[in-house]
Length: 77
Image 1 (cartoon, one colour):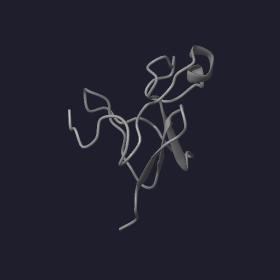
Image 2: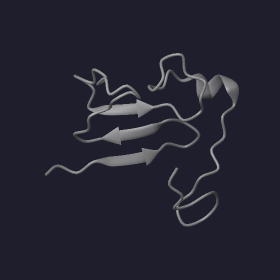
Image 3: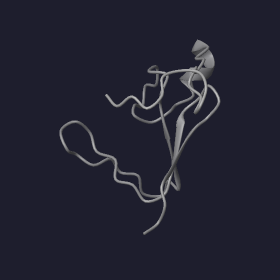
Image 4: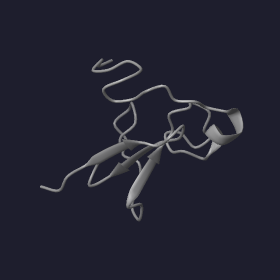
């Protein structure tokens, strides 16, 4: 089975690499064909949610999360 990697970019989107299925709250699947890497918004400002549209750059989004250091770790919503 192929590996999936999710990387939090510096003050930007989550970068998702690998074979994933992305579905909305109603169970409808997003068309991700032709996207080797999904860029998922984490600033909340994107007009193309759940995908990033680079709004984070204009609104000054600053991410506090770091594995093994600052921020909330290991919490599941």
